[in-house]
Length: 255
Image 1 (spheres, one colour):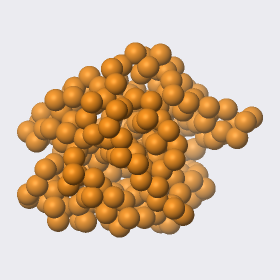
Image 2 (cartoon, rainbow, N blue to C red):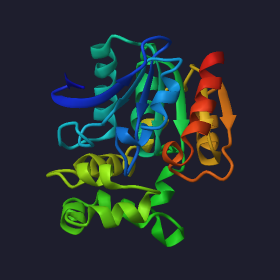
Image 3 (cartoon, rainbow, N blue to C red):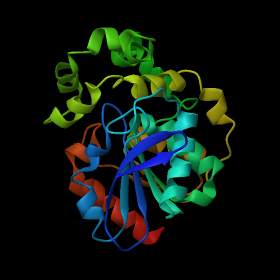
Image 4 (cartoon, one colour):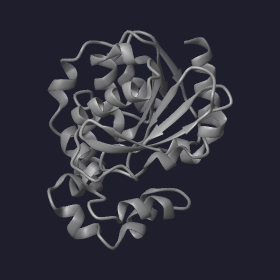
């Protein structure tokens, strides 16, 4: 499905007819398709929505940053008429979902943070390649560089990062402007630390999945439920959809 939201068109998936709503927000190098095995498991108990962020997937191409993405999500929740939602964010979606939860707590019943860090709370260190950080962050954040180096090589690059079949992700990243959404989120990550640290602490319940996320969420929220999925890597929804869905369902029952 698609909706006109905040001056752009956002694509989203929808499943389930009953229960409290859950909004799933992907990271990089993903789209809403990252949750394709999680959605039916959650939809047995919840209404479930999974959005392609601005500039990703089948949403309109366009520049992005975490503040814009947060406003997109705020307006999407209003468009759907389903708030407050259990808001789940992965990876580079962290800045957007945290901004939304902190500035529009009326939209967010709970926050589910999956392999998610925050600028201002240590995430920037991942861009320091000389000390074990990820080289692709600098590539994506440099204006014009993703289009110059990655266009025509989407499958090879995504196979380097993602487990399993990458064809659906490669399809969307290979469209014109397909890297712009990710590039914008990484650029904002490198500059927004002070802004995120100035936001109020979260009062809603938070589920933090895996160690780095747990350490981050302890700094910004008072009510944190911690889950470690042993043996699962960074792409939790793709690698362990049943275990992730089980953790989310256990959490939402009690939140």
